[in-house]
View 1 (cartoon, rainbow, N blue to C red):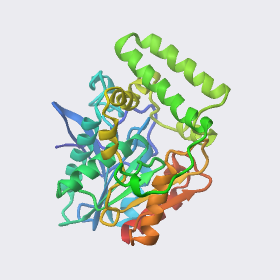
View 2: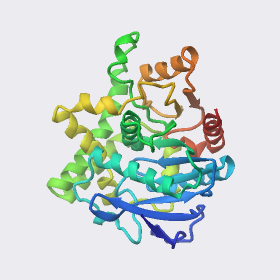
View 3: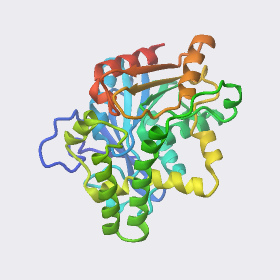
View 4: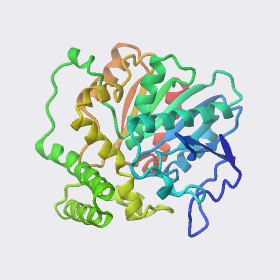
Length: 352
């Protein structure tokens, strides 16, 4: 690991940042790239607990900085904030220098694993409880990491998980014992998959054909989303994107669509069952409880009814600390839109 001492000027900004600067920034290797990943550290090394936060599409570290800073200060927690590989655009590591082909889910998972090692190495508290906090596409590699490390009884395995607005499904083996649930409507299914197809197609066209054709695909696809409208999110989330200090340009945005492309590639190669066995809620929710918070202000929800049912059942019937919280008046970026509610629920969950 390598400390970046210039912690206040880590992203490319046109104006002075109003975001809380991390106490330290540590870069770590992604495969053969010695400077590929970066962890923003908030809180004291001797904090009583530790946490890792990883967001998803299309976020670098920025959207998590306020939440992580407050969690560190208010909950005596050493928090490591990271993002998916290539989602940030640092002066010492431009996004264009990342793998042009994007990253596989194994590589994304390993990036989270290694970010956790950075936080553990920084902590001076022996056996500090570890909470994994994930949002959007951070949830998939986050759950895969949690399930793998728990299975291997790894010393860096998490004690609790917090998932924001995206929830993995229940493990295929658990589905056998569940009641039947109503299938999503045609509209809900269409909205859920349409934007994913557009993003995966834009990445594939950029990768294999032409970045200019990819721009046309992306522009036309999202023009229809605005006109019809058939996007999964609402104006409340558009406002979050508009306020970003370091909003990605269009080419970077299309590059960040590689998780969508990887998901379809797995499906076409017949590996979806194996993928879903790891991208799933932990089988033992009593030993690894999950707090799921989601915003209600969206056209579609990014969870299944049976996954919510399982979390609620585990808490009511089996003594798990797992819980589901619907956050009213919030959309996809609920920890920015309703920060006090989200922070209080996370602090309460971590202290249970």
